[in-house]
Length: 124
Image (cartoon, rainbow, N blue to C red; front, top):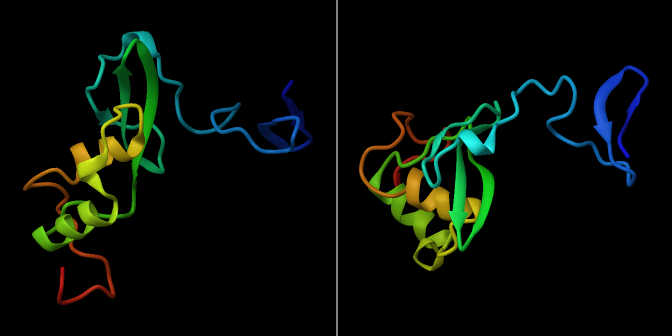
């Protein structure tokens, strides 16, 4: 059972961990029944770029993916490096965030208008 500590609106699990999405968490709860399967859209979580209702084999799962603050797909070399580093060719399950990052954020031309991260020059 979750409880609220004094001066802390976030619920805490019995093992002492904070649970995201509690009272006053800052983002609205998604209604899974109103979302279309396998159609990514902008995430209401401020720290994530996208959200998708992943459906596969009779299972449904809400997945948030892509960290805000980082560009994605900003050059061919960066795309190639990401896909190799994360083994995007082997990602088959739609119920994982890594599948959706590979498929949606790093899939082809286009992508983020952000330039490469500071300190990364030359290769990207």
